Length: 475
Ligand code: NAD
Image (tube, rainbow, N blue to C red; front, top):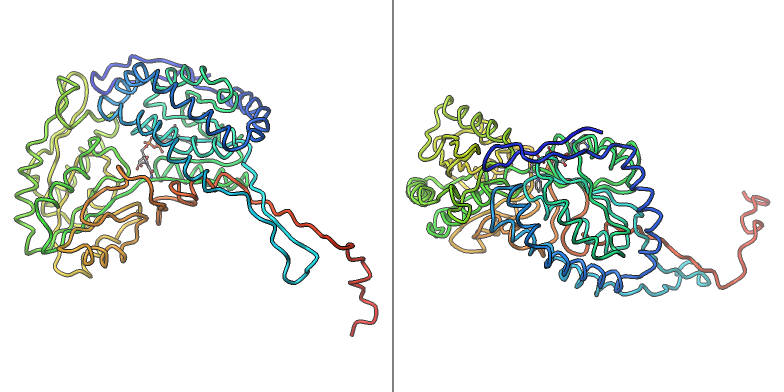
């Protein structure tokens, strides 16, 4: 059993210690969950929904301690509360999907009239969820809720960087014993995550491309599905004629919300040359108005960098851009306050695709801006890279924005806004290219992907004898 320590992102102090669940413990928990899952499945969707609603109420009752723990995990307050509200609200969102899930009819056969068939949907007995540190509660629960509703047992392994929220969530879960019998969350690191993949029948992974590849390989070895939600390098294209106030507002919010520590953050901005300078000036003015939430957590818009190693990545991307001739127009220095690391919105001009800030995931409040001349050039630039999570287009009209958006290789494209997937959860979408694998986690597929389709095929006549297929007399 190895010890895990966690650092408070606002103070830099290591003030949390816990034990990582090892493979033996994971196997024991998995066996318990598997043993209780058939009872959970037998309850049916509407009873399961009522039990999840009870869990939502328990989360609400425990929102004080859960919020405080998330605050210590992430160094932000309002977004911590929003995470709790989103998880509770998601239960009703999934309730609408389940309500549309009518039992399938028997379908008469076409080739064999005496044979008819229907479908049954069988949940994967045990779903393993491995999640990252940037929205610890939300991304731990985003797959767990539909999987539980589908009738699966679920084992969640959140990031070792942000483990504090687990205990108060488990306290809320303990008040709903029917759910606690099929749902567990464990403290642990990468080895614990690998142990979860080793016992699950289906795995949902949210995290980096590098770890996603390892999970995919491990899952392939076990012949289980791996639904991967990975990183992004989302482009924003701003065309001549776009409303510059709207475009700069959306660019800033889309890039620096949650201090850029969101997979769907805008990380590259391409602006048509005729409006490039005006866009840049306005963006810099707005970026400079943003404030750190330091020393008061209840102030400003920019929180600390949650994972200290991320500060090194941001500093290295800025240094690389500088060294290759880019201009840092505002921000650009990692600041230390308390013992935490902070970066103000950093606008960079004169960037090229030779720079890491335009190619590699940043996961911070950095806005590199590049000029383009033609639509085709903008689309080529937006599609240049290994990621395809989401993208955004601003134009004079929605029609123009849509025409460009349809040519971008990304699973979600915001039109005349940016990063809409962070506030609008209803649209089904997949991660393109290296940004993901598997069906959409939103919409009906987000529920269906936890159900295996079983065909029930009935014959109303006498079964065909072997003689019907005899080779005798065949020519
Ligand atoms: P990470 O890949 O380092 O870790 C994610 C999780 O995987 C953690 O819980 C970690 O303990 C676990 N893990 C590590 N090694 C493992 C292994 N071999 N087997 C199984 N599990 C293992 O990612 P991170 O740094 O925590 O999160 C940031 C990344 O997550 C960014 O790339 C971001 O874009 C991505 N992300 C994607 C989405 C999305 O929906 N597409 C959402 C949020 C974050």
